[in-house]
Length: 166
Image 1 (cartoon, helix red, strand yellow):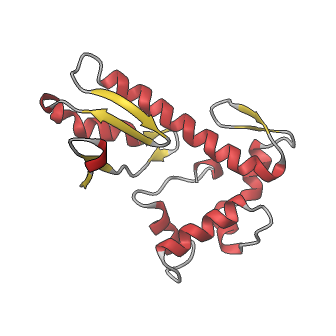
Image 2 (cartoon, helix red, strand yellow):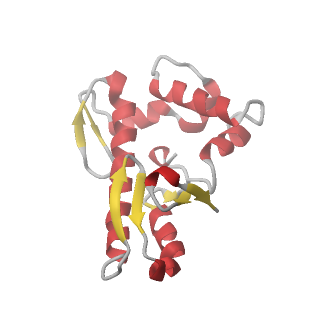
């Protein structure tokens, strides 16, 4: 949505698509599959998806025929078929890494540390005495150049035994 110049809705983007793009005629899983199938397949002619996001305008804005230029200034050589994929993946990566830098700044001088980054997930080795920072960490992580994104949180004594927290 940000690449289209639209405001990011609060909450689950796929649930938002069910209600606002597909007028509650399909399930969340169907909406997710449909959006991604349309988005990454330039041959797809899904009128509802294109009306909401206008993939052609995104291509025109960020693709010059040989390169995509993401909103953070990254230039990547690609063909038209891969342009949307490269644009979205590079933009999402840059957003995530910028959020990680801000989280790292917030944790400076604290016992809690970032222990790893996995695609779009941040693993934090959390000290009990820093538990008051949880809401600050969530706020920093979800606040992006494209609006506020929903953040899922899990906790556990080790990576293999994580449980989602609300």
